[in-house]
Image (cartoon, rainbow over all chains, first blue to last red; front, side, top):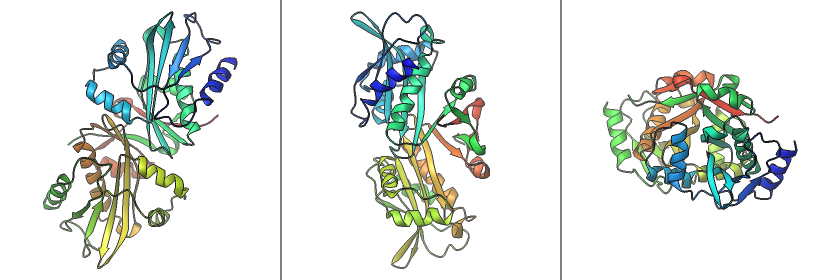
Length: 175
Length: 175
């Protein structure tokens, strides 16, 4: 509880105007398993080094995407959250997630990734909790995502429900 | 074929810059069942009369939403499409749909509605085809939606696939 409380107290002081907010939000390491010695921080800055983001996505085996389109996607996202390990004077991107939204009713979360070195250490949960908190602070009630089958359990543990009331996620395919 | 061809020829001449495009796009009545005598047009204008939109949503029994939030949602949507029946000098909103997007990879369709008087006459299909065409013209490949159980069949007939490769639509619920 100490961990979440400290995270969200910081988060709340940075709410509103997500499109312009570039604050780095420090996450207390309380409650983290190892590696845990280096500070972990979250950022809302969307002007990221795309090569660094690509490297993170490479590490989990995602297909590469054109950087021009990736830049556009970040700019047009409602929220962009990145997670960093601070090592002295350098920092390393270890997590990422973003959301599209109409700013009023619906937000949809995309591209949730945590570096394999940091998986199983509650980093993904911290990233998602922060993103959800930020979306909720904008008075958006409907938070959705499309989960690959092997991560349904992870999101289930975060309060996400699959196919509630029979609602089905659908993807369009060209003829 | 004549109907769709004429629809998309017109649509294509109005492509690009969806955020600013307020064109009225005429749909040929060719291929429509009755009522079919009055012209049906589509619009990309997002500056809609919200009371008229609310009336349309009332007609299908949707819960009312605060107009302030509805206005914000329309402004922040990537595309807003409305469908109108032209009766002499007046027009009546008979359909609506919108999409959120990052402008690059993903678009999600929300709030698809056709007035009960015009259901079963391929109006919903025309509305969706047009919205999909517009999204595709922006080079966005992943088009998604969340379908209530009773309309899964409708979207299935439009080229949407539920849970492809085991991907699940999920909704977040507060603790």
